[in-house]
Amino acid sequence: MTRRIFCKVLLVVVAIFALLALSGILLAQGRSEEAFEHVKYVQERNTNRLMAMDGVEGTAIGYNQNDQLAVKVFTAGPGVRGIPQELEDVPVQVVVTGKIYALVDPTARFPRPVPIGVSTGHPDITAGTIGCRVKDGEGNVYALSNNHVYANQNKASIGDNVLQPGTVDGGVDPGDAIGTLYDFEEIQFAKGWRVPENTIDAAIALSSTANLGNATPGGYGTPNSTDVGAFLGQQVQKFGRTTGLTTGEVTGVNATVNVGYGPGKTAKFVKQIIIEPGDFSAGGDSGSLIVTNNESCNPVGLLFAGSSTMTVANRIDLVLDRFKVTIDSDDTPSPPPNEPPTVFITSPADGSTFDSGTTIDFAGTASDTEDGDLTASLVWTSNIDGNIGTGGSISAILSDGTHTITASVTDSGGKSASDSISITVGTPPTEPTTVSVDSITYDTTGGKGGTKHLLIKVALVDDLGNPVAGASVSTKLDNTTTGQSWTGSSTTGTDGTATFKVANAPSGTYTTIVTDVTAEGLTWDGITPENSFTK
Image: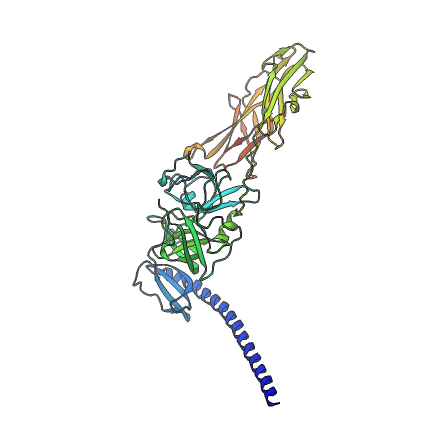
């Protein structure tokens, strides 16, 4: 009996101790989260004051030598005066990092599609690293790296080539281009007492799966498409053009640092990640993607700066959100781009004349890389009589006048092409009555390589074939790649041409629609010829 009572008492005691232990663990976890938020609050309250001290390069949250949560203060050298041992009861740990610089430095040209983690850069910089391949909601793919790698610290123009390898590794523009600069987050540099805050040093270049792969050449391979947040003690890895595959540990989060970009150029960055040891990266590794050091390889940060003792990275979630892209971990290559068909009118000859009431025979051919022979689908139109038939050969009796005859076709991918001739039926008029858009041509000008701005020229002729001067032309220009549109009006010169200009035109495929033509004594036929231009 006594033994049975003893056992029951023992069980009760064990249960009580288990409950106490569990509650202690839960309490400790709760306090740990509260402690982190308290340290973060203290750090952010005091960062500006600390960084105003000469020799202080930044702050972060980390663990000190006693494994306590602390505010880390990064200094250019030892002996910086005025740094307290604690802030509002939070320990302070001074870490001598040296000056922190954006990592640009001097490797092989890779066959296309190039891997990620290798040498790249704008033609006007030395070299950095391709971080990864990213994609937008429409399936377009881009190379991700830093602003100072692809946009040359804000100095590049949208549409500039990006190379693999970078110029310091032998890259040549345009022979080694793998894409064009599409977008970048401008770096806000300090000017006197004005010290704006930055969160990312990043840029993307429009590319293709034919030019850009999505795995490192060795190393961790293909990054996961799901990113994760950084935390203290997190084990990470990266593959970069200078140091290749390296591993490290997150030792600071929510960091604020001053980063040097050359003589007299400093930028303040907030919400950054600190990684040690110092040999985790070196010059030329800028742009490397930092991922978890496990089989998942989840993206954590975008490497952009460092010192002899540590590496600084942007939070990858902020980078991806800025450009509205995701990490592309799909190994399936995208299909080649659809090419437009080709169309030729073989009969009658351009400039032919016919008597009134004559039956005129028309013939043409159409072919397409993807669809083959499309001759039977040719659609024939006259600017005076409208639709006159379909097929490779047709016959028609046309009204008297000077006709612009157009044969056009559209392939299965939606690309169109056409060919046009001019013929006269009956006695040619002595005075013009109509005005037509004879051609729409494109050119580029300005910037490196003369490709910064886009020029569109619309040429008008009357029904006698003469250029029409002094006419008002209104147009709508569409970039079918980006979805952007521009409208404008211009007046034709003595050569019958009106010119339109789009400054800093983004890359993409453009088409122009003429919306109105006003010419004294003439009536516009309302037709816009087929046109397209890819920048």
